[in-house]
Length: 524
Image 1 (spheres, rainbow, N blue to C red):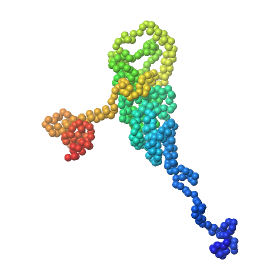
Image 2 (image 1 turned 90 degrees about the horizontal axis):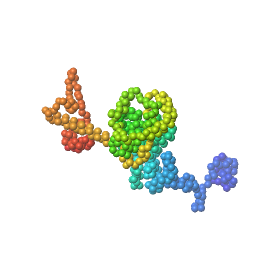
Image 3 (image 1 turned 30 degrees about the horizontal axis):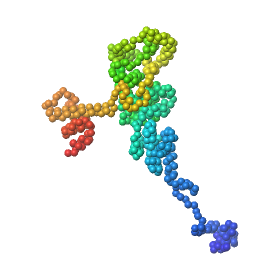
Image 4 (image 1 turned 180 degrees about the horizontal axis):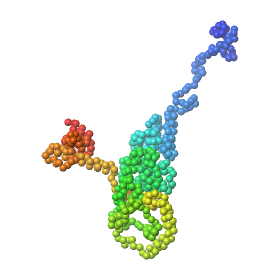
């Protein structure tokens, strides 16, 4: 079969189709013609078909749709977040069910979805009264704490839930077990720190240090404090970083805790010498006093019927001459006054007949003391060796039995039980105290402003003895120089203006100056 085309080599119209290859070949020169073997496939229903490629499939044999791919990726994200939060595998089903219920099985994609999953995980744990700080969830999700908090509020509002109160005690227990700073501490010391920390956490709740505040900064502050008590060297910056809280806030809570302990220490005979700087040195006696007060069930004052004495230890201490007590030479004269009974009214014990001991009892105690004498001598030698290694003569940690941990405050209690306990101090919330001081300062400024206004309106009645209530500026000429002495600030000027416009003093005390100015001064 010849073709109508011409040969590319000899230009002759002698092209034929090769039966074996289907290519065009020139019968004259024998040259194969390139790119001349195209055949159009034209057909109807019975013609050849191609491969139909659908959008959203992984290949020619895939059956996954867009929704199925989205659900798979969302479930994988939920599983990853549960693993990063360190939760049990059973929590995955609970979080997945909550996400599916809220999104009606559609799940989601985008930046909002991980925040939504973190909020659901937080709500699930709070429902079961488990401690998971929201700052830790925000750090794992990678968002701001306020953004996560808004999402938690939306989840709770949609499901119409009422979450229980945040368990700060369980949060403290979790923090001391999970912080890397305490990973190398002995288990016995960690157990003692745990009881002391729970005791101080619940005391902080009684002192309103946790009311209306984020709980983790006070947890970090108490962790550092109990670490210092047990000679575990940690830095507050490291603990704050491990708990994902601000260092500045932790230092502020730490200072507030020390101030509360100083107020408790004022009830002790030597309390007037205790300040924020040396409270760590006296913390053992202060906490021991708080523990004794919390264990007491006697509501009356100056009663000692509930206080028990260990007569064996008491007589052994009196008979033992090997045990010595060391003090700083600079504090000896100061501390001697506390051993005088007449200078210490809190140590007077009336009714000494209650402490009478029979001769048989004394003989038995003395025989027990003789049996324990070798052990007492060996312990005294060990303490003497420890004292010689120290540069300072006084160390509060030489007495290691100051903490008993027998108080109920060392265990987890309800808030009502904590409020009813007596730990030696009933304090007001810090915000309440600051508010009272602010109101008192404004009241003093109002009185001073009234005095200045009265002196200007009635100069004949003004006295010359008060040097504090001056006018806005008083010109004084000395050495041919004019000096201006100003004793009022912008707040005093605003208070004067409001008083001149007959604004009530009770409203001025509240401090809403801008609103009062708009209402009484500029709205005329």
